[in-house]
Length: 468
Image (cartoon, rainbow, N blue to C red):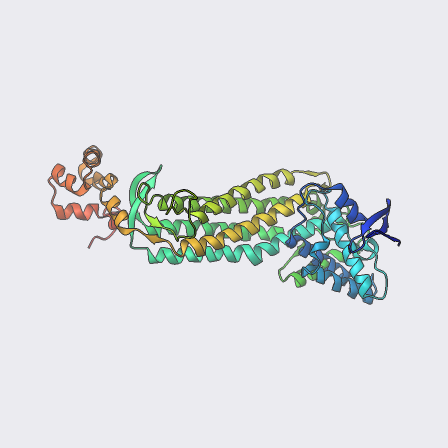
């Protein structure tokens, strides 16, 4: 191996190639670096971690099966685990937009791990013959995709989702007796409590959590052992099952063999399903973020029902202006995740015959979605929900003049009379109670009971709520 001007000469099946002298990768990786100068974005750290865990598991399994010597097996495993810990992230330069099977990333891992293992072991380790033994990019990359997405979901997304939900539920309990004007079509509607409104958000998040957890049951099925097209060519028949057990032990979460290896290579429906559930979560968070923005709007000319924590100046020209920056950032994250899902949907249907050929894109978008959602939810919990304050005077004033309160009088005086009271109260900018007393001649005590917003938030007298 000759050296010249900061480079060394490496070779692969296509011939010789200059590689940076200090690079741990070889010719295959270098060809990918040269061939794909597209985004400048390498594969995510979470994916490199999962890919390295797969390589470490493979070294262990091949050693246990007697296909690799114990010394070489241990050296490869040690090198792969160092990569998994993030000690060599700079050695993974291959662009996300590469060969659709992810072969370039697989060879990047094979070459880096082989170099490290050769340095640490007694024998020269070959990227293909040893690190990639019993494997193909076609089963390794779909496996690493599933492992990385599962780990990111279990370790980061679900705990943060639960944290946001619990934060909302705590505030909902604290505000369970504060009644406000409800809204449909952005127009005044029947009253409800802040607890009921926030409880809706918490229920949405609980449903999202259940959907995501259910999708992980299918995502955990690994196609490793299928090798090139699903037949398992060049892999020991025991390899796939043993790999799932080894990967589970290394990753700390359970994976099982795919029931159909061909499906695991040709189809990425499990990943598309998880992306779909992330899309639903993004829709829920967008609703929550926009509700917060509306409720916080003003403070004088908008709804002004709540006051969000002040985090930064809102304008470079208007002194004193403060904006709902965390809900806005959350909404942008949601838009991005919804866009990612559209791309993953297209990528998922790009499984031509026996192999999907947009695997790196699926992996990258899934992991980006998980990371963005988790980060946004943490901020939404800590910097928005936890510190929001209700502007009681503003809320009570609007509630007392809400003409829709007359809905409670429908069973007593009829819809048309109630509508007349509502229209007059609105036109004269008066409380519904005062106009109802004039129009109906009913006793004030009875009207107060019928029109009590707190009672109406529990369904009203006709709904069975107690007014005693």
